[in-house]
Length: 345
Picture 1 (tube, rainbow, N blue to C red):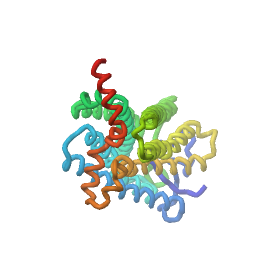
Picture 2: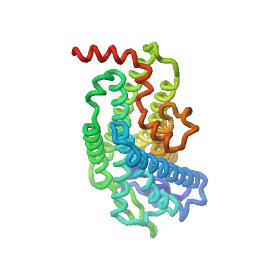
Picture 3: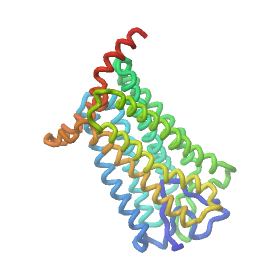
Picture 4: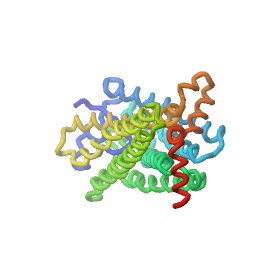
């Protein structure tokens, strides 16, 4: 394999005893990225994700945080957008490292950047789970949700999601290190002094960052779809398409990354080149989720196509403000019946 380096936001690791001069991070290169087609492609994709993700999420933050009344829905959107926005604004550190083939920002930023990126990776995933559960509860128990869904409770849930994300991102600050090799610095994961720590971290990130969230999201939207299908008021297939897109996007963006992270735990049993390319592609797909979230959760909001004649700000305000009302419209009759039952219960 050619000598070049690409550092993802954080997992591809070799035991220090096994490191060859050309095997210290995800990719290794001579000096710059320009001589390798794959590296150039990844550089372009990551830069595009940075630009689209930063602009899209900044727009959502502005609308939901400053132009709209604070509600439970805008609390979800604002928190998710902040998580994805922070993720995106730290991508230039990785883009620079990718282009130069070396880490030039020192040990503190090596640890801090990786920790922040993982923090926002987990917080974004957990917030997607929260939004899914909230939508599911609103559909199954519409009257209860109307009486008990408050901004204060939503804010507490968001804080808990961030605290959990912080806990899962701390290993990056502990194990991230810098190694000087052949006149350049490399920011990488150093697990050599802690036995089985690599396996524990890899498995915990897969379980907490993909398996459990994906299962919860799938169950929630499956319940919503079944509820809509059994309701006679359902005339449009749009809710099914949006929900299918949400689940499929989450699966496509995150599964490759976590699969190759798990394979990398036992790297000695797998082809180095396949792990290298797979980790790179998986990292780009995972990062792409940060700019796809605003599209799926906001721009594909209720009646978006009918609002094309209005301004962009009006479309976004209506999409976020009316979120969850598509299903409630289809369930308008059954909601009143559920309300009578819930009142007695």
